[in-house]
Length: 115
Image (cartoon, rainbow, N blue to C red; front, side, top):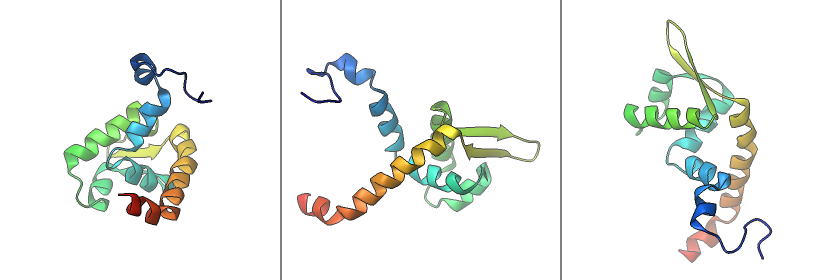
């Protein structure tokens, strides 16, 4: 028996799994990159748009809204600009993202060979 999952795993279990939800969000194409950028400092929307090449403004907006809705990113409006920053919750996720990245680098050749 798995120490993490109740067996059998039902559709209801999968639908209500907090880990699955956050892994799905972090696994989206641009989420990790945006979280990593915001780890250093807050960014304005236009600044993020200029910094991340290949990302449309529409997808940037959608990604920021999703990260904000999960409490990982905050949005602050000033008369001059809209600024995005990591929340404490978002900052607490960074060590886990870094650990997954380090694991991926360490095992890249094994993953590649398995594919």
